[in-house]
View 1 (cartoon, rainbow, N blue to C red):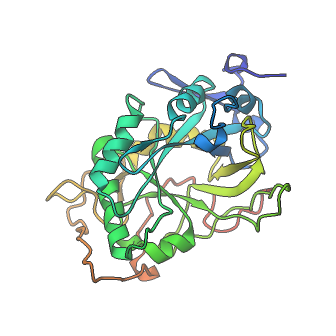
View 2 (cartoon, rainbow, N blue to C red):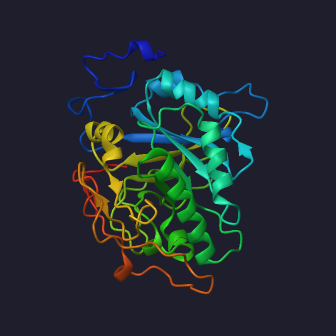
Amino acid sequence: MTLTATAINPVQDAALIVDQAVFALPGDEDSDDSQLPFGIDISRYNTSADGKKRVNFDTIAAHDPFVSFIGIRVGISWGYQDPWFNFYFSEAQRINRVIFPYHVLYPGEDAARQMDNFFRILGNANLDITPLVLDLELDHGLTLSKITQTTINALNIIYRRTDRTPFIYSRALWVNRFLNVAALPPVLWWLAQYKVSLPFPLYTPEKDPPPLLPIGVNTWLIHQTTQRGPSIGAPALYYMDYNRFNGTTSQLLEFIHGASNLKPVTCPLDDLPCTGGKFQQPGQGNNKNPVHRTQLKAEDPRPPSPAQAPGQSLMPSWLIHKGNFSKFKG
């Protein structure tokens, strides 16, 4: 049986209506409370090169466990657009799923050009309900200070253009090696950590949350739990990335609706986010004594340390855990 978006019962399902957008997700009372909201992420590789085997979003809509959110690759650096982004984005909207668009950052390229490409591809997407993600996996042989500075520049552009806090997608070991976490403005963390991959054709089960946290980070919002889950509605690729959101379904919707309230404290000199990871509460003005951002010196290779950890006390209060989540069943 194929379930289309029109088969979703808006009375039984939790729904969030924002600027004509409806997210049809199962209500908490209908969900297995041992599970965190489930999501997938996709790119051009989930569709065949000739386009004959496309991702089937009706299959995604009918899947059990329920797919609550979808990460979609937008592009890479300053000149590349994922050729299937527009199709994926419109289809994810059609089945009323939360969307996390992500863009791969090249640390040696100009951040402004890369973000121009990101926003150009996004077009008229409603960024009030579409959190943006920077994909940080590439070092290209560059130094920690250079990679950190490019990341800061890109994050600041996202803040200026959306007025909301972006995500960084990465892995703890990569972040520890290539980013000075203490120098970053506030971000939300989407972190990958898996079980040891089983040999093909076996699938690798999801790793129980939480993911390993980078030094200087004390919480997470999304955990990529496997890169070798059974493909859902995407016959062109045998495996698929699976993810879990750190909260309930209602809290996922609350986050999408209200994440713009997690606004970083800004520096009065240039109105850009300050380092130190401080957020202002809804309705609160700028900190009178902000921690000023500084340009990293090329010769400054300081790794992040617990003493430099950004304060995240104003992260969503409903975050389920920072440590082990004993109820989760992978």
